[in-house]
Structures are given as structure tokens and as C-alpha cells.
Image (tube, rainbow, N blue to C red):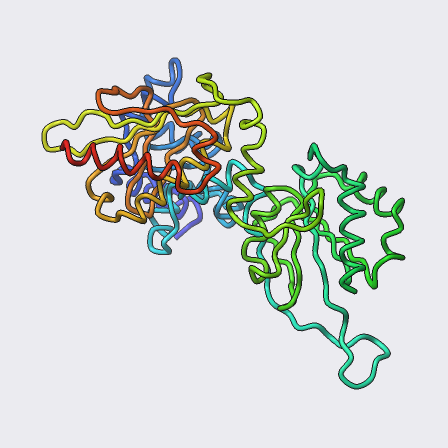
Length: 388
């Protein structure tokens, strides 16, 4: 078969596969993705011609931007993302919509888990017998480190060097910064290489999701911001994970991330302005339908609150798995994307939410203490189910 015939055959296969899928909604696509005179054209042709280029969603059930960004092979290919999912991705268990954790990582890229692999400590050059390299302390620097109100970058590096020296450790600095000029200058000014048994500087490449860092079994990892502290959550044993506070090292845990990430919101106090609050309510249940839990959020003003609220809601569903088949979830607000809870409930974005049930306002204080919002959600969700 000649090349033009192969191309035509493939194009027909792609168009037929997409047209037959419930993930391509012609009416929804025409209404929300097509503009002006383009609405007079065939939605399928429009999606095939410009959908990938502009990362347009074919329906509320497929997040094109997510599928491309989370799959480097799709990003580097010329295949239509929806076709790739239908032809290959579904069978490979790739997800068409972000999970709660993926949504968190999307909002805060530096909090994405630092991917590591174990390697043994090797013998030091020139040593005989069983001599091996000194243990290592790894400090992770990211953009949030640079804006800490309590410590400057120079102080962070100085404290890191002091801690490494006290423990007789080599010091490794992993930088997730886009520009490392200031970091390099500060390291040279502090002469850290003379204060520790070894100094290594590792900079992250543009596509961090494909980067893996080697780690030793007894290595100590230290976060220098709430995002870097979250990133090292699986990089070492819990006893070897720390956060560098102004007064020294603190135990690294989810409670600390919450407190630090919501610090600016807490400082502003309780207010009902949109950027500080989020309403969560149960909507009316139509005959034969399940109650709907609506999350109304301003993610642009307070992405931290939105991210932690999604996390708390998923914890409620984990604690009460019977709710998974008994409620639906709607997201209301600008710049929101659909979210998948436990691979069971797909929360879709809707322009409005008719509240005729119980509702309450969520403040940052409800999110700092793990479980506080969960208790409120338990009450309002269980009431909605019982009223069904």
C-alpha cells in the first residue's frame, strides 16, 4: 500500500474511533470549545484539526491538557490524545482525568514526589578494607524556599552546612529552581565545600517528571519549604525526613505541610471573601438520583485551600466507602478542571450549583488540623444521603 493510502486509512481510523466514543460529545464540544463562525463547522473535524494544537477537551470526561502533560510519549508524538487513549491508553490503565493527588501536584509542581532509586554507598577512593563514603544529607531547594519570610537562601544553606558538619555527612543540594545563579553565588560565598566532607550540587532538568535521583538507604533528606518537604515524602524512611525550620530541624509530615502552606491565609484571619473561603453544600436530589456535593472554590486566589479540601474529601470517601456509589460531586469556579476521586467518582466542572440543602463555609483553620474538615463533611454528606 502506498504512503498516501496508508495516511488516509489511518486518518479514517482515527476519526471513526473518536466519533464512536462517548468521550467525544459533539454538543458539548460545539458549545464550550468552538468560537464564532467555527460553530458552523463539523465538531469532529474541528477537534481533529485543531483540538490537539490548542489542547481542547472533547467532553467533560477527558482532560486533554492533563493527558498530554502526564504522558511524555503522547506529548512527543503527533497522535491525537483522545485517539491515543482509546487505542492504547485505556488498555494501559492511563487516566483521562487527574486524580486528587495529580490535581495537587498540578497546582504545586514543586510538591510532586521526588523520584528516587536506592544505590549502595561505595568505597572511598584510596581507602582499603571496608571503608565507604560518609553518610549523606540532601537538602532540596525550590522556588518557595526563595520566598520564605523567616529565612533567606544564605541562611538556609548555612544551616544546612552546619547540620551536615555536625552529623559528619556529605552535603548534596538538589535544586528545583529554574535559575540557579543566586544559589551558586551563595554556595561560593559561604565556602560550604570547606565545611563539609563533600559537596554535590544537582540541578533539575526542564521535565522533572522524568528525572530520578539516586539515594542511599541511610540518607537524610531535608525540605526547605512546604513544597519541597512534601516532595521528599517517599525519598527516605520517615525517621530520615526533616524540614529545616528557623530553629533547626523539624519532623516532616503532612500536618506540617498544611500549617506552612496555609500560613498566609491564616495570617489574614477568618473572612468570607472568596479568596479565603470555600462553600461546600449538598444540592437537591432529583427522583432516582443521588445527592450532589458541590465544591465552590476560587482556585486562583487560594489554590492551597482548594487542594487540601479535595484531599480531605477523598479521606472521607476512603473512611466511608459506601458513599462512593451514593453521591456525586460538582466543582464550581473559574479555572477548575475535572477531578477523579478514588478512580470511582468523577467530579465535573459546572457553571453554577443550585444549593437547596445544607451548606457551610470552610476556613483555613478547618484545613490546618487534619480531620477537622472531614468531621464537617461527614455530617453534611451523611445528612444528604439520609435525605435521599
